[in-house]
Length: 504
Image (cartoon, rainbow, N blue to C red; front, side):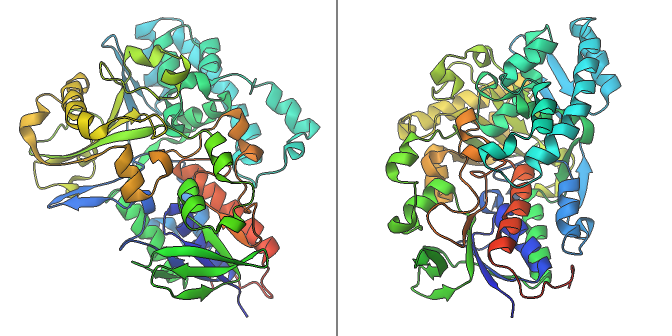
């Protein structure tokens, strides 16, 4: 008889875990609080304008191919990807810009405009990272987390030391590149983690390399279509997804998870429970107090959470076909690395850095003909560092609208047809994101790898976490790798009597 696994939440981590479990022969049910899949990336519509929420950058498509093939499916049957070029345009505080592109010859030609020595410096960095990818990706990102001592294998340690993992991401790039603009351009991926490059480990330079080597992609129909494709694959494998069924509590009896209690009082028994809800929110709302293990309120208060984001979702009555899909403005404030600024714990009301996604140029169906949707993101303090958002919101919105001209979006105000805003409080209230910290726990050395919460919950057997809080961390690529690890642990703890063939 198949083991029954219940998953709380139909975010990408929950859906990926369900696909892998169902492919192995487990009976899987997902209980989702809202009416559609995707979790934080479920998106929304305002009339004829359709918006992604959450992620807008897709990296390393082979991770998705491997996920689907593990269950006997083809990713391309469910989701269509288009490769972007450039990957991202970085506009600097001095008005110059740099297009990050997988066309390395073109990228080096751009670097030569800044300094004739930079192309050779980039070549040296890139060659080192071909080796770093081999040494670092599979042992650290692509395999289940180990104990701290488990990472002390002499051969792995010797290979890793050559890459100076104790450096910050900023110091790593500063060692290779003499131009500070290039240093910040290549370390901007720290913002995926809600961190400043000076506070982020150099191990994440591997993400920069992977974007050069394998590109950045966009799912046609947006990340809403990616969520729908993951959900369709899961249901094709026999997974049942229950929408509009919020979970009140995980049931823990005799030290083990035994199922869930829904908000309407129904109880669903299971052999194991996977929680794909925000870590801090779930601990304080759906995990019984006696089963929280070491994650008491005091422990949560001692953990470091990422910044939040101020979001503008704009439906506009014109297009910007001459501008890239992804753009990032780096203001001179990015060069401030004192502790509160490095944690994005200060609201920059003078010249904030910000990101704009312009997806309509490759995916026009998200807006009426001749119109666009724009997604604007500004790092702001999480709710540990209070901002009076009712008082600040309109003023801050007006500032960001003016700032958009720095990226070529001139006179946006008069073209806006529909608009929605998110503050840190919106993330907390509508998406149940603890402290509004959209990137979850930061990736400091004390919260990296084996020092992050374990997929196997500390306070109860047969209870598992999936999402940005666990190893290897936040971001779609890493969450999909975590799903692979989650299924590894579940299959050890709750084995099937007779595994079903892949793609049953």
